[in-house]
Image 1 (cartoon, rainbow, N blue to C red):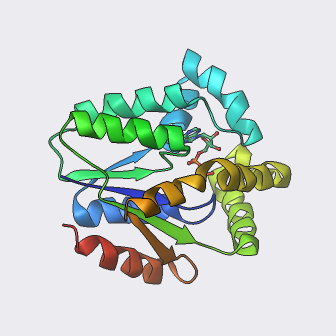
Image 2 (spheres, rainbow, N blue to C red):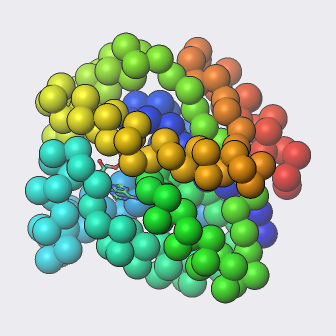
Length: 191
Ligand code: ADP
């Protein structure tokens, strides 16, 4: 089992790259953003509660995503490994994930962080809004808030992982194919 985290601010290309990487390396792609949106689409009570938080660009409570991830890990524990996308998003979630993996004889093997310039992020998210129909991409105030929540709540995980020698920055500027090759080159060393 090999487990990767893919990190980066909103618009950094995590989702796009994760789908391709999961296929290439035969990993289970776990995206908490996709799971939460599936709850909203299905009209569940949880989805109803979370949609108003997501619409502002704030994070949903740690317990909610931790529970979702734990359920998925147990359902798919026979895979080659996991690619965590958009999770963990706080240091608290990271500690919980380590605990969850540890209890199952697994660990985080590498944290890949996509570095993308701020103006490029905003440009990509606005372009994506046209296609995705995601309400949190349409509003520039919400987009800026998501980037700032990333900086204040999620980026501290980088230091946490750097100390454990898990941190691998990756240039997230350029074509989708170029970025895919850069990410794959780092992951190859682990599989
Ligand atoms: P992005 O494109 O901004 O990276 P995601 O699809 O990963 O978006 O997530 C969309 C929204 O879902 C976030 O802004 C947040 O409200 C919520 N969310 C997703 N994952 C998490 C998480 N691990 N912890 C808390 N909130 C989350």
